[in-house]
Image (cartoon, rainbow, N blue to C red; front, side, top):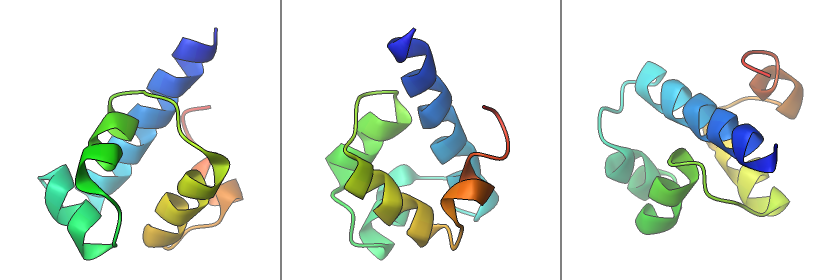
Length: 72
């Protein structure tokens, strides 16, 4: 069950990155001061800390409510 949510979370992060015009996750991570390898793992559905999620959501210019409004 947890793996399913992590995959959904990764898919949501990836979709939002692409929507922001970044075809490459490394460029997005670099532009928002997020470790590139770590960001790639998040998109692939690996576990992340809540503080990391907040940083990513902020990089998209969203609230947590907006982030979780689709796909969950």
